Length: 107
Image (cartoon, rainbow, N blue to C red):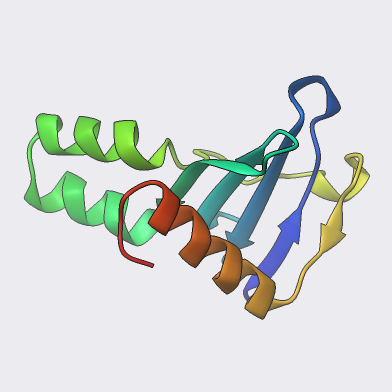
């Protein structure tokens, strides 16, 4: 079952949002920072795997510079983090589209 949730890192004023698969691995990862809600990350497991299978290291590096780095471990214990909450799929889709536009990519 797909799960959508957010947490908050007060020290960094950062809101990480995650879409996870049945095993708890991040399939999409969005990070929104600061009072101005500036997107820092909008990375997709599907896109990263495609690059790893079909592109070179330079393409993967360009992707990470543009969209950030996908969480590389299941975000276990997220429920215990400050500001943690499940979110509707629609909210995740909206944030994804906004972050991708802001980072220079398609929604």
